[in-house]
Image 1: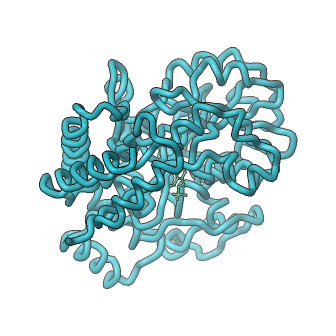
Image 2: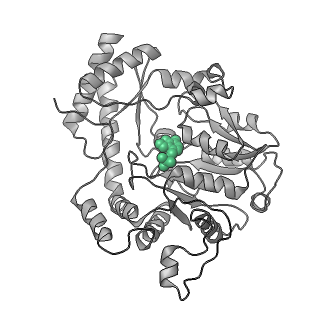
Image 3: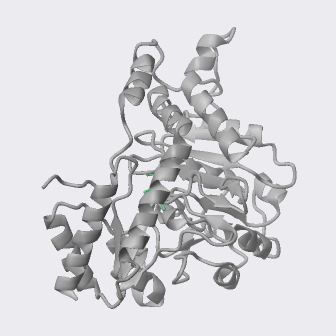
Length: 400
Ligand SMILES: Cc1ncc(COP(=O)(O)O)c(C=O)c1O
């Protein structure tokens, strides 16, 4: 039987035409398409400044650098996330302070974050896992009373730890009726190939800092860091009256190209349709499993928030880690691609080697050990969703 992939991108002739147009335009690196995508994303999330780069990872790392995070500093993150969240903290010589998650939402909460504050806390970086927004207002309100010692100009201006949201999964999710993007100080999106909205690889920052921080200047300054510290990018050099640029720091190289932005512009134009279809797929799964005694439903919405339906994180009550793996193997053998989100960081050799111990994060381990992420993508048909449901039910019945 035909294989059902996990999350292929939504690519059709419209996408191909848009990329071809850029290929033939004579301008394929960062240029008008990237700037147009930034403006459209800014309008979509109602932010007054957005910067697109080549990944969430590099965008958020540059944001941490710009905030002045370094050795001796602490960044609060969940233990249950992708390695990128912690790796960028390590790159700066700072310490990821990992917290266990709430078993219902898979989030770190204002209560656990408040207990983890120390005088060294510089950033709080919760994750909207699967696309469900965290308790943004709750986290912001405890941040306002957090202990804080400012060590950079931007830190002084903000006056408290930075709230950098890992919204890699939650572009298009809503919190209190507004798109995720203006609730935290900075919101970082991922447009990686499997994400709801993709640019093949890519990411963006939306800025919403307090106390009159100049968003346009901050955006520009991170953009300079993303291009070797060059004061003018290639387009500015070509378009401006003078070719001459300066290099004001030993910067990085992680700009988004117009080829990528062209894909993103097509994706954004029809994103409402994409979200609607993803929601319908998740609802079909919810309905298909609701009478199974082992079924633990993912949390997609409540009074304040609605997910972007990035992942359908199925959890199987009573399944051990080994049984989950066996169920997955049977499902894969039946031609359905599934995944696990995520191996908690203390399970991974590198973080284990640093002394993070899995038994300090029991909810993260439990969430991981009986979790299977099911296929969710725009072109998945109702009939294919039914096939996934049947395959999962059969495998669970055989294994449990
Ligand atoms: C929670 C989370 N944060 C960050 C990232 C990193 O995103 P990118 O691949 O765009 O750097 C990912 C990617 O999958 C992710 O799942």
